[in-house]
Image (cartoon, rainbow, N blue to C red; front, side):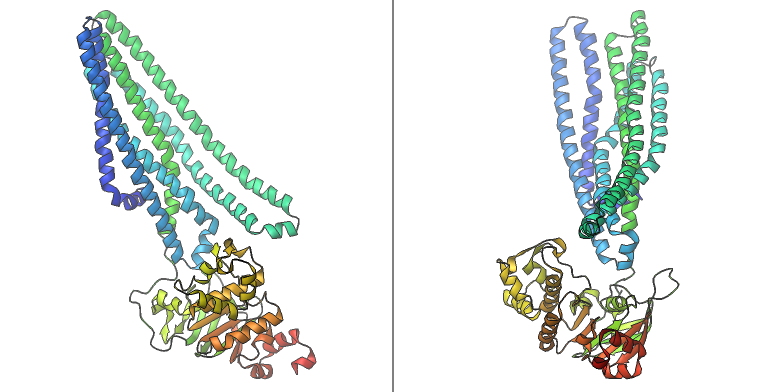
Length: 577
């Protein structure tokens, strides 16, 4: 998963990565050349007392060091550039993919997990790319080059490498094998912490209202402690890694000095060559250590790569048509034909056998008990979810064959839970029509009975709005959401129980103001108060996901017992008659 992910997102940056390889090669060659020059200074200058040779070779070492520094600096710059841009592209791809998801896919992953995948997981992969650019290229070149140079200096001491390198590699493998599952559990527990924290921040009013601060603190503490314990588990192995590396490296250095000292004493090895041999063995072990450090990061990045790929490889159940069609009739006409919706794996359908038509210029009300499928029915029209059987038609075409952007551009949806974005009142109202003028915004506010309180805010349309619209009341939030839909002037209005937070008089004023504006559009409204929809052109009664009746108020009062029960629960006997 990780390799495929990196291959996809690093492909546009091949030039930078090729530059990294070339510069790292130059840097490592310079690094490997330095111990040899140092040996020449000792053997050819210090032992012979040749000051001129020491100066000339020393200047060469400075020149080689300068080349190494420049090459390494530019290599890190190019590697960091490629890593940061690949991370940017990954985040953009994740956001785009999540933007295509229906409610079904979002529910499968969960909002907290999607946030973690787009932040922490991408950061782990990004960090791996950055470290790979500086370590992955350097380590094998340094290791192989160090072995060649060490053999060149002394074959008699090279047997130490046959012990040190495998010992270091096996030690690192032992630790890494145990860290992989630990990192996987760690990412899951980061999700859990994000989920609990998000719930508590979002529901802070409920927490305080029911005096649940202590219980919620305990719940967060459990998730936090589980993450801490997992991090400590992984951290113990990480802490063990470096002492092992230093132990093996120092033992190897002792072996080189011990056995090399005897060779110097025998006259079979020069002091400069012993010094160079020691440097090369340290470079080889350093290369193995760097590779191990990268291998330590790779398991966590691999887990993150799997989580990112899981999102990118998930196709939305609301797939765009291969050959998008346009409307064949009035875009304001809506028709349901034996429509059914059933969640995957569910025994019972949420909606079944739904068939009715909505003509332009008419109002259709959807009523029913809680859980009868009213919101689900509304969501089928703009394809927020797709029918599992039957069809929904808009403008004479099956919505699954219409271009999604074209379909949704003709719909003004006011959801059950009005949501406002951080910004200003103007930016929220222009969400569906970016080029709307201030006059259009004020007209929509007047119709939604929101103009008065917006003027009283002082800054008018430029009044700041917090995320979720928490700076305004529930009723104000609903009226602003209604105004946002009105600015678009769509062919179809979908009001999903969006008048519930309005008092009766405001509700009546809003509906009266809406009538001349939506006169030529199709209006489908979910409502709880019968008094507000009894004059609708048709009323659809849902009962346990099926249509219990359809008709005008008078017809349903005569023929539909379910509707009559709803009416009788809201009115006295005299009012019903």
